[in-house]
Image (tube, rainbow, N blue to C red; front, side, top):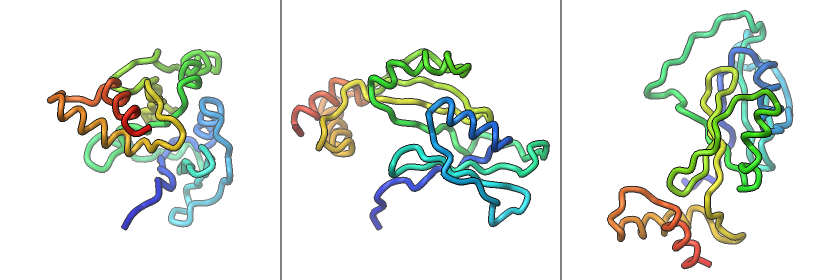
Length: 173
């Protein structure tokens, strides 16, 4: 079976309203709907629009004073949620977060990515990411990564770096 993308990640949150406000303020996500959770009458779920084809589902208690079990990092837990943006948006991310009262890291460059780290109100680690060298329209990111991995292997390098991405883009364009 071939999947066509990720439908939506679901995050269990402590306070649904606070979490909706955070994702709206930090990323401009639109609330599509808020409804009871069919599987648990003591919780609600909120579907947020990230982009045309991507959503984020927040699930939390009807009563924000209800204590949920704390998650522990390990098998089956979420380590982080990566949110892809374009380069100019990432250029402004730190300052936009700061102006909105949201604490985020300054930009970090690692390998072929530019990253800004922050946490949502529930302690979920979020990584806002853009590639240092973006592929042009019509060139698949998957194809670029596949070719860059081959170039990395040929170089006997441990990691894909931006120069591998640049070479892959040049070959595929």
